[in-house]
Image 1 (cartoon, rainbow, N blue to C red):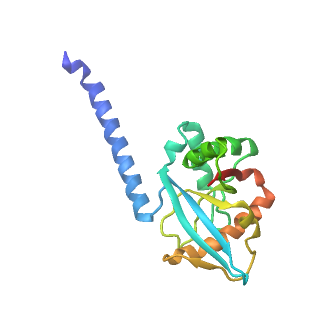
Image 2 (image 1 turned 45 degrees about the horizontal axis):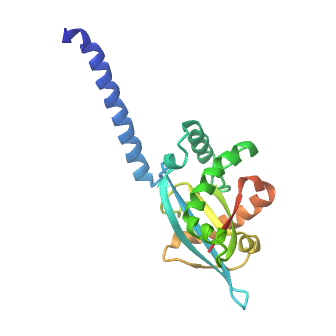
Image 3 (image 1 turned 90 degrees about the horizontal axis):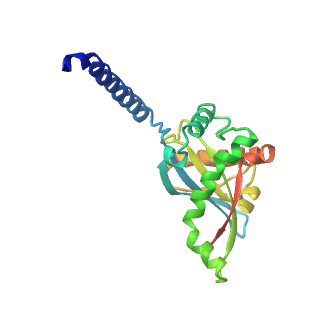
Length: 207
């Protein structure tokens, strides 16, 4: 009687093995190339200006999550992955239609809001808080000197982002040499914001 089901069992085991092997090979290739499409980080680009006009940039990671945890809808996740594969060194910004962009950026908005939910409730209760407006967007940097390539949510205080210089020296405060390319990335994003503002989203953060 068991023999009747042996072909089905064999097919099921074969499919599982092929799926496991395919996943293993993909993960090995990603590790070798240091490309991780399954993860996403929220990266704060802190820009400061001193009294002499010197511009400094400090980069900090606020969280790292699985991309699939951010986009639980498989079709939406596929749209994001497709956009990642279309980026290059001349444009790290993920491109979507205006309608798609709202749906893609809204889950990010919600995740960032979670980080500051306590302060938001303090504001609602009439307690003293400070409001800052930030801009964020989805990126994938392709520069050769980027240590690990993964989708990154860039978040920057809006006013400082718009004041970021289009040229000139910027002091990058980081132990990693690959952060030097972040200056050019921010300049590219600033230009993209002027051209396609719907690919960016603003959020008010209470501190």
